[in-house]
Image (cartoon, rainbow, N blue to C red):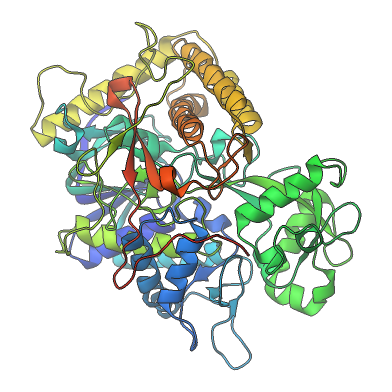
Length: 619
C-alpha cells in the first residue's frame, strides 16, 4: 500500500470539475507545471449535472453593476462586495472565452447566444446550452486540459493535506496532499512547490434528499477545516425548489425561466394566489420558492402530502424539445411522467452550500499555499442565498483567479481578510453536547492535517512524508478493526440533518441534531472496514468520507443554532425576521485542534464605487 513515489508539480489542483479544470488551465497559462488529482474522471464530475446556465451581462441594456446588485440582494446582504463585483465583472469575459473554446451555447435564430430569465434577476442574463449547460462546460474545458497536456491523476482519492504544525493556523503553510489510488491501493504524496488548489465541490451527502452526486461528501472543506482554515457561513444551505421526489434529481430552474408554472393540489398558482411573490411568482429567489412549496404541503395543499406540480405543457412541444429536452427524459425515467402531457411532481431538496472554506477574492486561504474555489469555497459571493445561474460563473471566474495567483502572478492586495485576525468577534455560543473530537480519550481514526503538537516540522518534503505516514497508519488501523460499519453512522447523520436542519429550523430540533451528531462521532471512534482488499475498496473510501460528513454536519448545525434570525436560506422559528443590527456578519468556525471555536466577522458592503445598503428583499 505504501509508496516511495512522490509526485511533484508546481501547482496541485484537487478536483476535476469546472472550478478545478479552469484553475489548472489558468495556472498552466501562467507558466506553472500543473497536475489535477481527482477521485473521479474529469467528465464524471458533478459539474456535469448543472442544468441551468451562466449569468453574464453580455447584452445591450445590461451591466455587470446590475448583476452585482441582483447578487447582493439575492445574498440577503451577506455577500462580500469585493467578491461579488469580481464575479460579475469577470463573468462576461469568461463566458465569451468558453464560446471561443467551442462551448455549444444555445442560440437565437439570428445566431446570437441565447439568454433566459432566472430567479432573482432583473434582466434575462442567464446564458445556457439547452438544459445541459454544466455538461457542455465540463467537456469544453476538459478538451483544453487535454490539448495543453496537463497531467491528470484520476481515481486518486485525496485523503489529507500536508500542512506545517505551527500553533497559529495563519502561520502554517501547505506543501502538498496525500492520495489513495483507488485502482491499486497505493498511498502516495503529491508535492506542490507553489500551491494546492481545492476544487472538491459540494457536500450534499450530509443530507438524504439531495441533488448532489454520491461523491459529494465535502472532502475539501473538511480537510481544510482540520488543517486550520475556518469554515464560513456553513448554516446557509440552498434547498432547490424543484427536485424529483423519488430520487432528488434536479429539475432545472430553466423550466420556470421558460415559463413553467407551479400548482398546488387545489390547482392554484400559489406563488401569486397565496402572496409568496406577487411580482415575480415562480421566478422569485430559490429560498422563497422552496419555503412556499413546503408551506403549501404543511398546510394541506400539497399533492399526496409531499410535493407540488410543475407544469410546462403550455410551452408547446417544439420549445420544450429545443430548450428543455433533457427534462423530459428525467421526468419519464425517474417518475414515469411525460412532461408534454402532464405536470411533473417536484419538492425542495438540498442542492448547494453557500458556505465553505474561508477565502479571499483570489481564492487564497489563511494557510500559505492553500487555495479553494467553487462550491467548496466561500469568498463570500452568495452570502445567505445563491441566485440560480451564479454557480457556474463562480467556477470559471475564481478558478482562473486562484490558478494564476497560485502560479505566482502578482495581484492587488486583497480586500477580504482571512483567518482569525483583524476585525473579528468571539461568539457567545453554548452547545448542548461536547463538540469535535475531544469528548473522550479515544477519538478513533482521526485525520488532522496539521501535526499534533510534537516537534515542529518545517521542511516541505518532511511535512509531506509525515502526512503520508499518518495516512498509511490510519488506513491500516481501519482495515484491522472489526468495528461499526460507516453506513450506519452516515445514515444517522443524514436522517437527523434532513429532519432537523432542513428548510424550516427551530432551536429544539437543532439541539437534537447536535446530540445525534455527538452520538455518531462516538460511534465513529469504533468504525472499521470489513473489506480487506487493497484495490477498488469502496468500503474504505466511504468510511474516510463519512468522517468528512460528520465534521461538516456538526459545523453546519452549530452555525444554524448560533444564528438566531431569518436571512436568505436560513429560517428560524424563534426569530422570523432579518436582524441587521445584530447579524450582518459572517459565521466562522475553526477546528481548534478538535475543539471547534465559533466566531464572527463583519460583512463587507463597500464596493468599488458604491455601498450596498441593506433593503427589504421582495420579489
